[in-house]
Each structure stands twice: as structure tokens, then as C-alpha cells.
Amino acid sequence: MKAQRIARIDHELQRVLGTLVTQELKDPRLGFVTVTRTEVSHDLCQCKVFVSIIGDRDRARESLHALRHAAGFLRGELGHRVDLRRTPELIFVEDRTTERAIELGRRLRADAERRERGRAP
Image 1 (cartoon, rainbow, N blue to C red):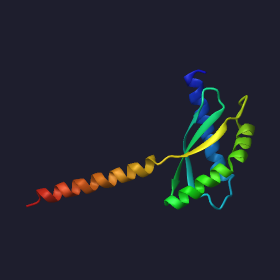
Image 2 (tube, helix red, strand yellow):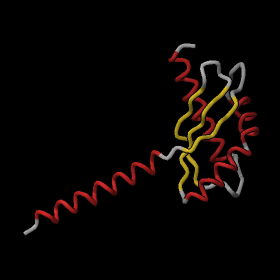
Image 3 (tube, rainbow, N blue to C red):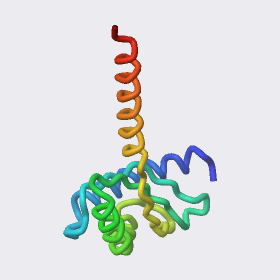
Image 4 (cartoon, one colour):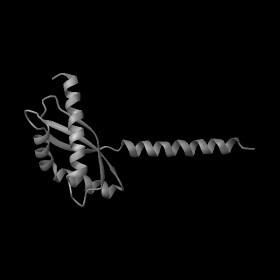
């Protein structure tokens, strides 16, 4: 399948899943979850759904468990809202890119402060 079509499908799946997760799921285990991106396989059988979860590791684990538990519901709703021949199986993966970026920024600021203090008379 052409890369442009796959990219359009990825974008549409991300948009619809983001709406479903934030507005349709009512699981109390679900924390603040954002669908950051999706990667659908070339045969459209599977879709990796990358999610960013705000909170500690326990909250992230619970949220990921809640998403995996709701995968069947989400897949069914996705099938109703997106016109594809087959609705892909959803595989949820935690995206920790935001956490890593925040940590890297903190380390860079701390390093810059240390260098600045070393220059002071």
C-alpha cells in the first residue's frame, strides 16, 4: 500500500482514537491520556497506538491496563467511524517521549547553572 495512504489512515485513526479515549471511555483507572501517534501495518491488520500518560508509573500502568481492557470497544467504535475494509487490532504502547524531553531539559538547565556558577568570581 502506498505510503501516502498509510499516512492518511494513521492520521485519521489517531484523530478518532484520541476523541474516543478522551470522550467515550469512562474507566476510573484511566488517567490523563493523550494519543500521540498511530502506526498501522501495511496490511491494515494491526495498529500500534502510542499514548502519553501523565502521572506516576502506577497511574500509567493502570491507564495502560484500562486501555487494553477497552481495546475491543475502541476497535468497534473505530469500525463505525472510519471507513476501512477491515478494522485493525489495537496494540497500546506507552510513549514516554514527553517525559524524556522534560528530564533532558531539566538536566541541561542544571548543567548550565553549574557552568555559570563555575565562572562567577
